[in-house]
Length: 562
Image (cartoon, rainbow, N blue to C red; front, side, top):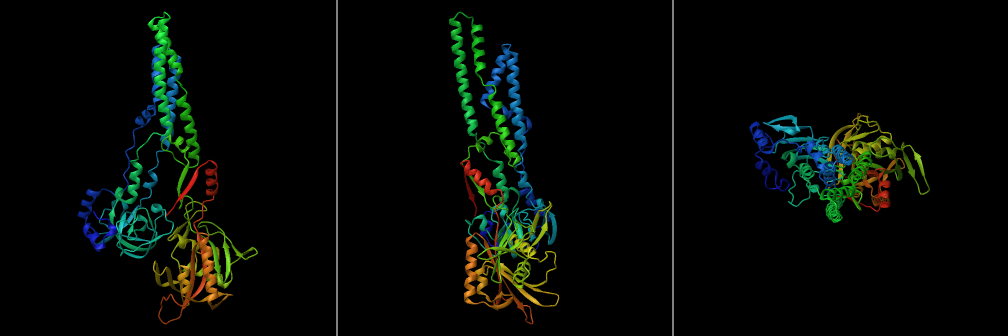
């Protein structure tokens, strides 16, 4: 396609790719597309042969001078000097070759981000295939928990939100809308009618048409930039080259002067040449390359112990000259794990401990005087926790390693599940049956789920932006009962929201409504206010020390975030 997919209506995108939402591509179309676009995978750079990598260690001017000195020493019968110089040069080459070989792993991480499977419509049939088999024009289906296997123009969406932290760094899932038509200049992070390779569907489901695969996808362009970067000499390499050129000039001048002085003192030309060359060889700093390589290798080893890979040994010296460090926020300075820090329920403020998705933590009742540990057994707090757990589609599961937990679904909803678990609602407990759902959208800034328990009683659970939820509430949970929500209390809750937000907390409001009508109905009016939660993507525990050490070293850390 010549026109960006996010700027076109769905039908035009399908027409340009000769595809159909109902039937997908035919087998012959898939074959033709693969011949044109190739496989849906990141291209691998042909590795440089080991012998080339080894010979590259001899490209330094100082090393050339040492090799010349060794040849001259050998020609003059100075075998001890020759052996010493050759040994130093070879040790230097082997050390550099070994260290750089350990760091050639940069693209492996990008390769591992590709989704292994995809659900695709071909010849009117839905099938599961390898993601690498996808071609532009394929119609795919994605649902909560799926990795997006290719760059896709969305065709249908239902309550779809996609976690794009791996591509844009944005920790909050992005709501998607297939009906949008956007301007060509729309930034990648704002293209809400698109889904991109390596991102994860946090909520909902939908269909889309593949518009780019492999190296043509956005993640492929990033991989391409890593593969084609231009290597520039580091400051140390430039200084060593300058020193090497100076040594060449000095040695040539020294040879000429000593040779002429020898002839003037009656020496034969051979004796004069022998003396001048011997002095020139002695002036060459044989140990310099080995000392430099060893120092850089020691620095590289210290960095490797801290899981920092350096592809080229001389780059270690460049890092030592850094004065500004620019860092991404999400997942780098933070855990990329939303965590509830505060709960306001029944007019009582609670501080919540714990970090990440581990369902471990405690509640402290906060007053103007102190904080006291409590167990959330009162009806007001439990009502708020039920909204957190039941207006929710996420699951929190143990990870592969002990103490590690992962969220299946929206990270924000995962944090709410963890909150409810800390408060005594078991995550393994069967939830009431879902009767109806009104997905979150940007206009309402709210989400509602109507559930029915075993007795047939229906309750609507609603969460969303505090200002919008408060407007729709007529009562609140307080003193373990439902009472009228007065203007004074409405103002107090609004102030609590502002105070939480001022401390960089993301605030959500909880509400509910008993649905006693003959027919199940979701109605986001006449709600009962249940509480507020404040959450944050907490910084990694080592960040504070790292920033302090940077400042002590005269380095200014800068956080770059959307």
